[in-house]
Length: 316
Image 1 (tube, helix red, strand yellow):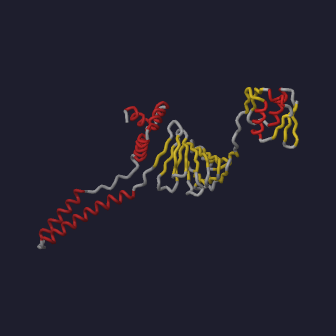
Image 2 (tube, one colour; image 1 turned 45 degrees about the vertical axis):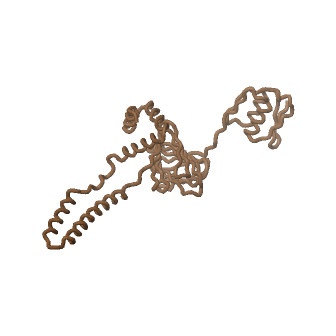
């Protein structure tokens, strides 16, 4: 690493990094997998600094003193050379086994290494557990280990896409809440978990709950908010995808009619081909009704529209 990145990293972990430095850090991370690996290792080092127990030390001097004392005692006894030598090697082997056992115990009782995913200033995409894609929005991070049984911890905002309903269910922990997927696509916003956490579901179903509240089940096109202050859930809204603004710029009349038919899923009949020569230059908000759109268009050219069952007819 160069000195500039060293300085930026130190400022990042101390919480003093500037927006410009974040941009530089993000560019550096995107240049290679090795840079991301270095960042991951430094994150773990910072996370565990001052938090892990000191590994049990092996007192080599004490063990050696005990070993020499045993030799001294055995030499005073009138045993055969072979027997004395055998005892010496037994003690040495016991000390070695004790050292190995102590080191092994420390190794196997240590927690599994965390996997740390982060988006600094631009959004990042990752794959989790080979069956889930996640998009982290700027400032978001996810921490998990391979031993957590598909359990991840989220800070910030992220969108999840679980690719297989047959796979093991994933649980996202955000603040005090848990989001358990049931084969789904959903977005979690835990940018300010101390205030509220929001979940929006676009496909499938999720269970949104805490340790002390059974929470709510959400289906496609549903959203819910957890108020961290009062520790209660509430359905926010049933959302639908908003249609874009309807804009015509020098659009032939017949092409505009086809666009309107597709937009509103209706049947429109134009009685005169003369209208096809007209070019439309107008726009409509995304919430305007088909009747309003036809009213404005026909009035512009002194035409008329009528409706019979589900068919609209335009005449001069």
